[in-house]
Length: 204
Image (cartoon, rainbow, N blue to C red; front, side):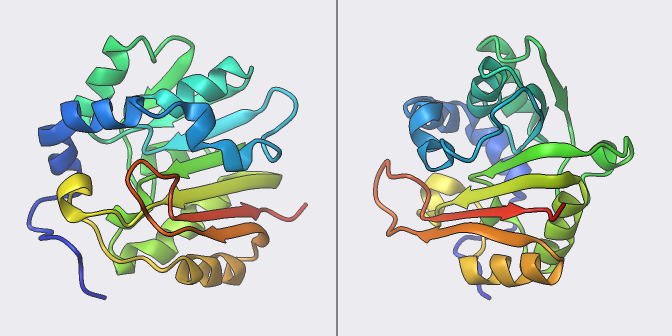
């Protein structure tokens, strides 16, 4: 599939260069609004949660406020720096790691009850998607949930990214043994919720 944007610039490098504007845009949307589609699906009791591509820490801080133990993964040093300035590192462990393998996280052999991958999937190349799904599903505890949400958006706003059909993610995940809980597609619009929302479960 052809990329929407020139991938000569690595996505992490792009976020380092544009962190301030990205943070401003993300912080203009409340975590409760951005993740409203998950309201009924989040763990009801304190759980072990992973936020992949945590950015400014908006969602990680929200998940922590619900009583969960949160690990936030963010490979962009500038985005992580903004998270620190916003006070999003209190009681949250931050790890400099990235998909598709999440080597540092995986080395600990953890099992998460819930994994959130919000607004980052479009940065993975087609060759990285299957290994990324495998990595994330492998980190789930039995009955654990994986939530993937993203919008194709526009290249200027979102940096280097590839077209990423939601159906492709679903096919890969089902082949990995995951169960589908929810699949939604929305037409992208300015300040809208992500255009693709997928919730998967690791069988018990």
